[in-house]
Image (cartoon, rainbow, N blue to C red; front, side, top):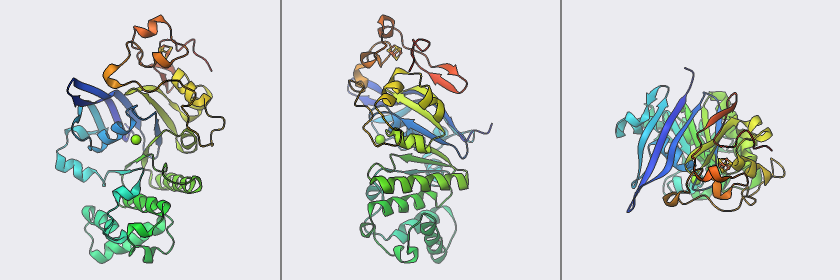
Length: 324
Ligand code: SF4
Ligand code: MG
């Protein structure tokens, strides 16, 4: 198949005094080369744990307890720690929300990018430095040959995020995971960074998983969208269908609170309640306490995800009756 990434029935649980509690509970999706898949959901929906699971970076007491994560057909969950370390940064890279936490304050930008490059390619220090400058130029950092000598604190937040992107892309990964990559930045810089990620991914045919709670970003960037709620995928659609004909009451709620797609908004204001505590999951459909369409059966039956249309899937017992 042409799939770059195939996640099948992924389950990541956290060990607690009261037993194993699901954070990701049977999540499936695919990413094609050059495609941007957005995963949206509130904090606690399991979207970040999904991305950490793919990276092999779930820390105890969390644990991947089931499913498959196939990268070009190879199950990452079957790799040894050493093999997985080679995949990370080489085949899969990740950029996080706050780059200051990921950059080492005591080393120069050039040292840090060179380090990444030399972990994966046999280059001399001088060659790696040259390549670092090249990468900084590619991500639009002016005066790259000077900036390689800077320390992280000498750069603005936006420039630091560009450095992170340069590092993430230095080894030409096949898959890039961007977890809320621009949340900490101001709006103009956000747009520049998103455009940059988008352009580079199309140039290199990199698959992207964009984790976000911002539907404006989704509208700008995504080809396809997965909506997560309480550790499950509740809707999957291409970006046009998701905005034009959302099928899950939760998605409808999210879109309802967004007057204009490009406007920055806390999008959940209009949906009452919060993501359920996974230790006290509601019976039946986990969304029923917040759902305006809920009926008696919703408190009893856990819905399966089903096709609403071609490439459009919805997890709702009342899918046929729910409309925008
Ligand atoms: Fe709402 Fe029921 Fe559909 Fe769940 S199954 S989303 S509670 S209508
Ligand atoms: Mg997160």
